[in-house]
Each structure stands twice: as C-alpha cells, then as structure tokens.
Length: 453
Image (cartoon, rainbow, N blue to C red; front, side, top):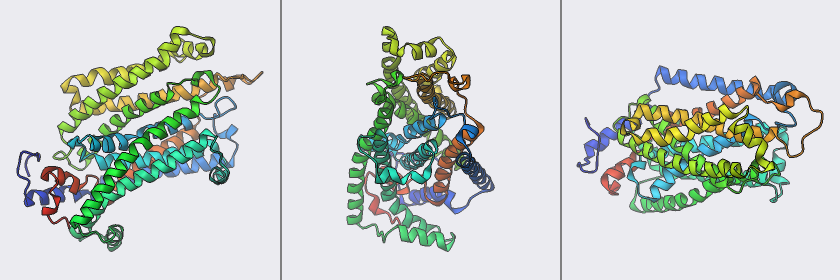
C-alpha cells in the first residue's frame, strides 16, 4: 500500500489486510529502543514512589517546601494540568464523533488512553498533596456533599469509569483481531485477548449493540468531562481568597483544558507517527486539522483570559490589586507575560500559516503550549496562596516565597512518567489505532463485509 487510503479509492480486502498488519505490528515485536524507554519510565516512577515514601515518613516541613501559606504547591498545579489534558478524550473522541468529523478515527483511541492516564494520576496528585493516605477512605465513608473536595472525588471517579468503558467497548473487536492474527504471541497474552473479548463473534446484532452503546457513552462523557473540569475550578472559586474569587473560573478552566488537549494530542500523534511508522494513517492532514483546532481553542481561551485578568485590572479593586500588580508588573511579571505569549498568542498566530501546521513545526508549537499551560496553572495556585485572605503575623520570611523541593519535583516527574507508561504499555499490548474504526471510515459503515477475525 504505497499511498494513503482515502475515501475516493476502492478499499479492498487486500488493502484491509495490509492496514491490519501495519497497525498490529507494534504489538508483534518490541524493539530495543522500546524496552529502554519503558525501563526509563519505570525508573522515574519508582523514584517518585521512593520520594513520596520519604515525604510521608519524614516531616513535610523537612522534605518539601510546603508551608502554612503554600500548603498545596506544585502538587495541585500538576493536578489541574492532569485534569485539563484529561479532557483530550472528550474533545478528540467524543466531540468529533458526534459532529461527524471523520478524521478523528485514527486519533480516538490515542486520546482515550491519554485521558485515562491523566485522570488517574490527577487523582494521585491530590492524594500526594493531602498527606495521610491512610485516611483516604474517609472521603468516601464520611464525606459531605457540601464539601467541594467531595465534588471532585465523585467527578473524577465517575469520569474515569466512563472513560475506561468508552475505551474498552470499541476495543472488543480489536481483541479478537489480535487473538486470531498474532499467533506468535505468548499464550497468556492470547488468553487475555480471549477473556476480554467476551465471546465476540462480529454478528450484525453485536455490531448494532456496540454502535448504540458507543453513541450513548460518547454523549455522556462530554458533560462528565466538562463537569469535572468545572468542579475543579469551583474548588478555587468557592474559597474566600480574593485571587480566586471569580465567576469566570469554570469557563476559563474548560477553555484552557481544550487548548491543552489539542496540544497534547498533536504531540502524541507526532510521536506515534514516528515511533511506529504510522505515516499512512496519521497523515499531514491530521496535523493540519489539529493546527486549525489549536488556533480556535487558543482564541477561545484568550477571550476568557481577558475576562479573567484584564477586566478586574480595569477596576483594580483592593481585593485583587496585590495579585494583579504582582503578575503584570511585579516579580511574577516576566513569568506571567511569557505564559501569555507562548501559551496563547503563539498558538493563535503561528498555526495560521500552513507551513506551521506541518508535523514538526506544529509539534514544537504544541510542546511550547503545554509547558506554558502547566505554568499558567502554577500561576493560579502559588500567587493566590502567597497572598492569603488572613495573613499570619510574624511568619518566617521563607514562607512568603515558594520553590519546589527535590522531593516535590521527583513526585511530579513520576506522575508524568506514569501517564506515559500507561500509554506506552497500552500501545504495546493493544492496537493504539483502531483497525475496525479506520476500516469502517473507508467502507462507509460496511465493516461486516470483511472477516475481522
């Protein structure tokens, strides 16, 4: 198959077999580079576990930079970031499916796996920040619905469950394909495929049930994703701190999440395209569409950014004055304006040019957007904590500043390694691009004419 498949060509049985061989190749064999990458992620993850054990067995006052002022630090900044990129499944899979944008097909499973990993380690980031993991069960047993943190617990748990189901249901036909096509795999792996496929036969009735289930789940996961991101914003907006006293926070967080979701999807698409030689399936067209989406999401987030900062700055009331002046002209000014330039202005302007929507330039832009996005959330959490509603008298000078300790940075690095490890391992045991969904797009819904077993 020397050229990209498109809907104007005749998609034959032979072409389907070539596509199936291409998309299942990463499962058939793990190269040396892949093993080194997995080992590296495991080492970083273990280092984070060790750092967390040190944090919990010794005083946080000794092992971290968290104090009565900055009691959250980068742990909660990282939680916000993970929740934000957790919306990638909503945007790249659910929204595009419901709006019939066919180019979503090779991207949907990648997005769903990233979303699951991000939501999982977002929840872990909260536990790390809270301390006393032995009391975590109390949130479920004795939690009060009036508490915003219970809203988060319910939202994250529900969203994670929905995303796992949304990933698993369309995966079932792929499991049968793996079992029957990859005969040289270890017996335990083939048994796993057989067990998880639940006797899938590919009958018209089963396909109909699968399609209906996917439509229902797709419709459900969109409000769930938006709700969890909004609830996260409410954790801040419902406090008495002036810096977080904003009715715009929900929309601001959701728009930021969609912007970061496009950026993380662009990066993931580029990596899988190069690592697995998927150029025929993750084409330049996908990057062109992602670049256009990046511009749109950056414009939307830029609008809410104006509402969040410039409108309060116009009034410059006493409650917001300290934080706004600190961000605009004070010690955080260089930090803040760098985030605005690289996190909003750059993704609005550069992808307007077609050359910037090519794979490499757009990926570089997306990396810049992701870095700026993480620090944008840092600037929400830290300055707000350093200007408390009721300042404590005669505190040490060090409490009025914050820089994360080695322990904190190691734990945060481990959360990123954990997400990457989930995505990597999934792609090594399951097709990261859905064979039947891509084939269905070429066959215009007539997937049953081919034997998917």
